[in-house]
Image 1: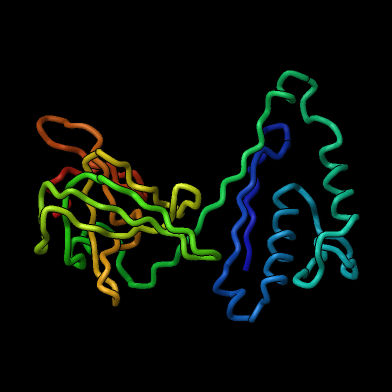
Image 2: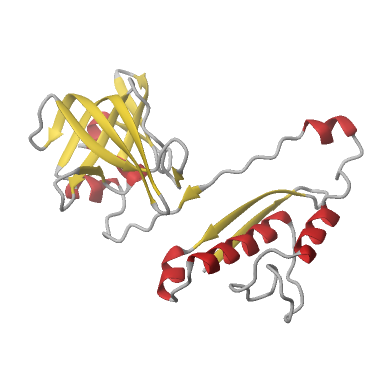
Amino acid sequence: MTYNGLAVNRQGVQTGAGMYLNRTVLTKYHYTKKQRTNVAIHEMGHALGLAHNDGGSVSAMNPANRTYALRNCDIRGAKQIYASAATTTKTLATAAQSTLTVDHLKDYDNGITGVEQLKKSAPIIVEGHITKSVNHHKAPKNYYTTQTLAIDKAFKGNVGATLTFTQGGTTHMAVTASEILPQHQTIIVMLAKNTHGTYYVINDGQGMFVDTYINNGNELFDHVSDHAIYTEAMLH
């Protein structure tokens, strides 16, 4: 239900961490909001470098915690880890800036993978540029952006001069392997329509391509999800 990936340098000093919570599993086993918070605190403790406490410990770092909130023993452990700088160079220690990035790792269950399948499945493939972006924050899981696209070319489907669609994530809540499409830059998007009649990008970053430069007369597009390069002709 959870995963932690730790980054360590050659000296064995932890330099970063990635933490993921599988909300599907938490929902399946009927975790309450408080229990989900306890699990998140537990995994954040691992990201900070804490190991499990004893099995009977009434603390966030209990080995199988979903019940206990943060306790003084958890705080003491974190303070002990960070009691002294990992480097003897004071300048480096004081200049270091901690950062925290939160994003959503989405599961696309439509069976569509790869550009060729996307091209075949998408009812709409268009090229244009974003003229307006509106972020929507509906916690805990519905973060999305409404994009207005001025259409320069329609490769597939019947559309007008402009089109509005949604993509997952916002400028404050990213989606893994995706990004908020930039305004006033040429893009190609592969779209479908949901049951409410709203267009959306298929599989977020997998269905988005951003113009990068021209080579030998060919416009080259960066595939947002994996940064592979495609010519315009390869995308329709």
